[in-house]
Image (cartoon, rainbow over the protein chains, first blue to last red):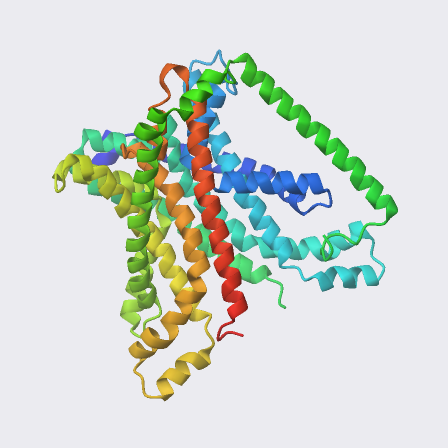
Length: 226
Length: 273
């Protein structure tokens, strides 16, 4: 195990995985919330667009989405999202398109998680709110949304965990994160393959297990008793 | 939108507002589509011969069909093996022996917690250096092994929650007519649990199909990797779009099937009612 740390820059790979996770989680949350609003809103055309997005993205492999982002949107269509004068332009470009692909993909799952949160709220709650004279905004703010967010914690937690593990897919466009590092390190030191596997498995378990346990207990704590 | 928890039935004013919003949203969407088409046109991506190249007999014979076949083969073998794995460890998780329960839990959490791609890479290089199989079959074995372990762990959780959601009376009834706990599990609880989890199992097949595209990274010639072979001469957009459409069609059909099975089961009713 010691040898691995001496010979390779393990931390740089882990750090890139964490960076990809955090940025993609942020953007996926923003885009997913927007999609969820479109899907549950009263405007028919936005419902249709939202559900079309979710159905298309959910049924496409993430590998394809990430590959498409860099090779088609970035290279073929020439959309630049990194600073061209930077000496690390090509790397930045790959990293940002990876974040783009990951966000676009997981936004669909965030949308569904939020929507399932809304679906946990019984219609009677809104009817009760209206019957005691609360207006649209009031009933949303005080009755419906607080319950919806509580119901969405558990599904959002599984999306977060899936997202962290899925950052490894960025290998397909050469982003130097954990899975890329793993393949490279094995090429150099095939004798250390199981040490590498153990180290990387430990890294992912150390991140995903606490998030899973923590968010599950949070979701139980905030769950609305019905 | 009759029984929405979020909105009351719209009155005349609200209906006018919704109409206005619809028109605005439609215009914005139309604008986005026009911008995208313009960009595609400028870059020559809409030229007919770029697209007709995707519909020639040879493109399908040598690229798409073998790719689809490889994808389906890997996913099919993996889901069958994953089902076996999931049944064994799912039963382990609800076992009466604490050691078995604990050990199955550890195995399941381990394989659920690490990325599929990491397992794939580990298997791929392990097989490459050990030379157990012929070099050409290594990628296939690595893809199937990784998909089996991950999805098997997910199915084990499905089995556990399926058995857990059965009414307690089912197991009690089995025990009271003199069946052993193992017999009760096998003949009473598992059949009901598996029927209940059928829709989730079909949805899991969608996950397996999508994850089989990870095989492209370790040189398994599935649909995505084969499609990239057509990318000669800067033709990167069209093969990827084709691959995406094929994936979406297959997975969408599977999702519909899952929904159908779910409704059939709901109509038939079960012991939980």
